[in-house]
Amino acid sequence: MTTHGLFIDGTWGPSASGRTFAVENPATGETIAMVADGDGTDARRAIEVAGARQLDWSRSAPRERGEILRRTYEIIVDRTDELAALITAEMGKPLAEARGEVMYGAEFFRWFAEEAVRIGGDHTLSGDGRTRILVTKGPVGPCVLVTPWNFPLAMGARKIGPAVAAGCTMVFKPAEQTPLTSLALTRILTEAGLPAGVLNVVTTSGPGGVVGPWMRSGIARKISFTGSTDVGRLLLAQAAENVMRSSMELGGNAPFLVCEDAALDRAVEGAVTAKMRNMGEACTAANRFFVHQSVAGEFSAKLGERMSALKVADGTTRGAEVGPLIDRAGLEKVERLVDDAVRRGASVVVGGSRLSGHGYFYAPTVLADVPTDASLMSTEIFGPVAPIIPFDDEDEAVRLANDTDWGLVGYVFTTDLDRAFRLGEALDVGMVGVNTGLVSNPAAPFGGVKHSGLGREGGRAGIEEYLESKYLAMPRS
Ligand code: NAP
Image 1 (cartoon, helix red, strand yellow):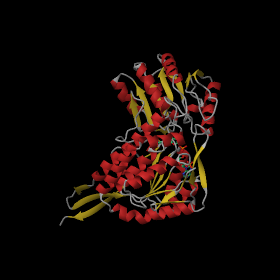
Image 2 (cartoon, protein in one colour):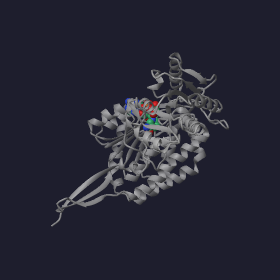
Image 3 (cartoon, rainbow, N blue to C red):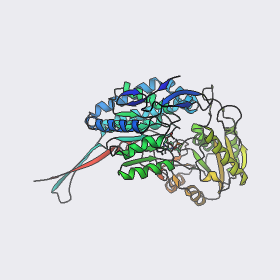
Image 4 (cartoon, protein in one colour):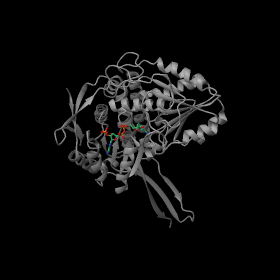
């Protein structure tokens, strides 16, 4: 079995302790690789290298950085099948979805290859005309990058792409459950010409023992984190110590609104996309379906029909549409949430239980008439469960939709243009899908409000997160 090392200063090697941890295939429970288990000693070495390389890297030509990113994009596209197989093996999503993730991730490298040479600045005169105000933009400095397991390639791409474009060095800790794709991406970036020491990767089974020393180092100037709101909060508190720039892509609790005038079949297709992408294990997953009472019955029946027809299987099986959940804890959480909703009065339209056999499979589930006090209304389900809550009027729908601490994304289905704008503006979220169940796009600013985070990834805003402004005052003589 292959054992993978840490990547520090352009060299692969074992952890200081010599320890390793296992990576498991969630469809079979089998160990598929061993990975070096980094600790504080490795972390300190990595951040020192990132600090030492920052000045040189910040002086590199934007075109050089852009070309590295462009080559990275091309190599990823060439190796789509290989990378997709790796994602499916360590994370479980069906191969077709894994291929989609590879293309989505690759596009961030292409986007930021183009952004690297478009870093702007500003030149104005002060109001009294006596001073030239020159604003330049430079890299923020060494960055700490921490990613979750649900999109093993794309989450790293959304951070590494802009950091390279801006000229930042990095220390990177991928999720314990899915480090293999990040290590493959690291090899690709090296092959594409990324200089030694710009990206340093420490895998670990003890995240606090690696990320903590980075946050305390005084070397790192920025943290970019994607993951749960609880861990994000902890890292924000740590960032406060050294007043670090912080980008936080945290959890969601997306409302999905179906109005009485919605094109119902389109809404059902949108619901399947918004709910079932990644088996529901996505921060953008529709978590609460608010459906006008006049169409709730028909919508539940149609969605139930679509959901029960989805093919649930090991992600490598031909035609698989729904894979296993990431681990036993994820499966048990979904079970608990569904049982709680049913106990409180929800009815099961389809699904409602785990599937027998190997792996962590849960049946695609639709629950009707879910009471608003059910736990899943205020919990990120992270599984293939669609709870439907009927509403009477638009105001009630908005009130219910916004009745959450999170605010990442919302979905609105209506054929009334005014209503689409009205609801889009009223939802307290960072992104709105109007008659679509998919908002993720490298050219768009991805991110949330409230407990869903700070900052944006992708779009024109993406690179700004890695840039610092400097203003030069130059008196006119
Ligand atoms: P998580 O438990 O917060 O873990 C995310 C990352 O943080 C992992 O690398 C994890 O390491 C690390 N971590 C855990 N404890 C830490 C600590 N004390 N100090 C430093 N790092 C620590 O989240 P997850 O379960 O992997 O991912 C699911 C969550 O991510 C969901 O809430 C989802 O909504 C959110 N998410 C958000 C977005 C977005 O763009 N808004 C995108 C995708 C996912 P280990 O792997 O070793 O635990």
